[in-house]
Amino acid sequence: MLAQTSIGVEWGQINEQAVEWARNYTYDLVTGINGTNRSTLQRLIARAFEEPLTQGELRELLSGTYSPVRAEMIARTEVTRAAVEGERAFVRELERQGVQLTPVHATREDDIVCPICGPRNEQPIERDDQFPPLHPRCRCWVNWETR
Ligand SMILES: [Zn+2]
Image (cartoon, rainbow, N blue to C red):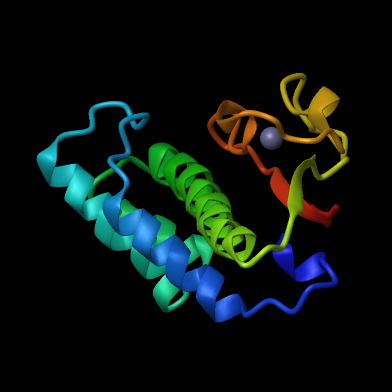
């Protein structure tokens, strides 16, 4: 989360980047994605950041398209993804202004951290495919450390 760094960050700008990203992302990792449910996800995940919606509100809206179990999974996974990608887009802008930040994986460090994410806790993220979510329902986030 960028808010935890010492640099002055405007949350609104990160949110805008997440909205923008969610509106354009293709959701190809969602099973059974097609033209119709893709545009539903683009609209609803963007709305989750614009309004913002709670997880419960988003789940409710997704349940028009998905079963409760899938609505919950998609709400968690895709909000995490859009939040992380919104931060990454914002950080790319900061980097153009000369600010150097290192992404570091952060888990919740509780009893249910999975075997995929557990070993990644507090490790620097070096590749695109190491950014959370690393799997459906991933609860991890990114801490951005100044270099
Ligand atoms: Zn995770």
